[in-house]
Length: 344
Ligand code: KG4
Ligand code: ZN
Image (cartoon, rainbow, N blue to C red):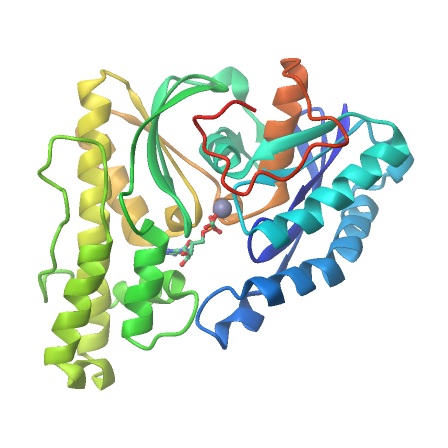
């Protein structure tokens, strides 16, 4: 089984070739520099970039894998959730190829692809479904923050989610208040390694509430009020790393404690992490320590599969095919608001 996967839900144009559960090639064209000037993703610009980059990215993925398009057995693409015009570019290209090649067309949920990416390991990555353990899965990205209980591959239930901002959005918005550039998450991460996480105290929203939900907009607001009172700190080279470390510590503590709590309560011995925020050094370290303490297995998506990429889309798409889950026909539309609780 050889398939092409396409991802274009936000600001990366990506294509991957998957063969027998292994990634043969993955190409990612990032638009970060284009959107940095505006401090966030501009849908119109993202769409133009996808349009310009998709064909070269798909061609490069085929060249790197050493296959011709005619050798593909299936095509899959992110069908949702995401920015509608951005999704449309990848989806329509995938549909056209599937139609021309007369091969099955699979629509993959982007968040579900993140959710299972901790089971895609190695260099090149391959899917280790045989090593799967029932788990509590934390998906933390720029657009989503959720906790799921995963019983088997493709059998999961959402047990908690953010009530407002996603964790990555909180990193990015706080970084913007600190005038750090976009996306702020990785910049904050780097500065935080040089700072003191106890220098300032910020709210830990919903930490003590007996549920599995999160809220990050209050933390962002408390950072804003604090900086309105102390505007000089943004220019202060000593205070800046401390501020980054303190904000990061607040986000990380809530994520770690609530995830560990539910894993213990559900008596599940494994926690998985995925999504762009799972790249965060402080978060990885805090989860490692907490999981060791509570004797839980920690399975984290590889760094290069945490942020958006087509490899995770293809490896999950292949699973759909293996399980004979009905694949979308060539006329199906994008699903910009596709929730994980809705069927494929
Ligand atoms: O998964 P992703 O590429 O896109 C979405 O599906 O949203 O995640 C992007 C998010 C951004 O908010 C970015 O700031 C955050 O992941 N991120 C990080 C780090 N690397 C990426 N946040 C904190 N620390 C990092 N090292
Ligand atoms: Zn994503």
